[in-house]
Length: 218
Image 1 (cartoon, helix red, strand yellow):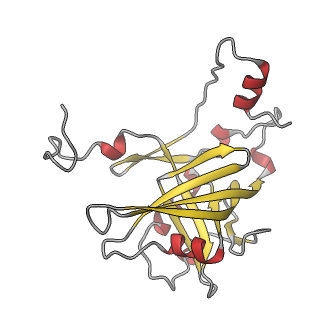
Image 2 (spheres, one colour):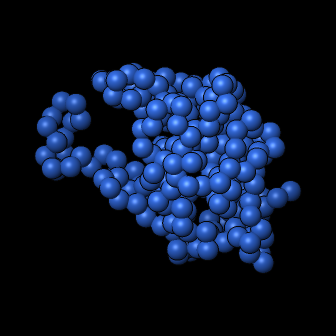
């Protein structure tokens, strides 16, 4: 089975595109507008880019009426956005915050999560989340779509501060991912949760390369 997106009709009843690049981390992002209105929304196009310095990106499609997402506008106007790790315990709050609320609505209140102060960023972070990145906005790259909703803002940021709850750090000094239970997007209505991990090392790699891959602090 094969087809050319945009040229051929999809031969399946549901488009497989979003379910091939999986699992996708959730960019559960909190921002604040210049007027002081707080926003919280999840994005399934989220990823780290590099580590020295640590930089991240998220992609936000426009709304069907052509409006750009509040998260993007807030990041551009204030210079900051905050990533909150989405977990299985917080899945319902994440889902509620995905609703397209008017700009004046505070999604923290709608989702029933608590605001915690950031140190550098002007907006809050989700207190119940186990890990956070305070991100300094760098730039936006707009890509043209075939429809209003197809247009996408790719937003880049530099991580200025990292928060981790100590109860999720193991005796080896690493995050206990199975205990955190992060969730990820699979496409359709489907998500997954990380409860099991395994380790692989590159054969014959140098000690320096292995330290880099493991993320060993200098």
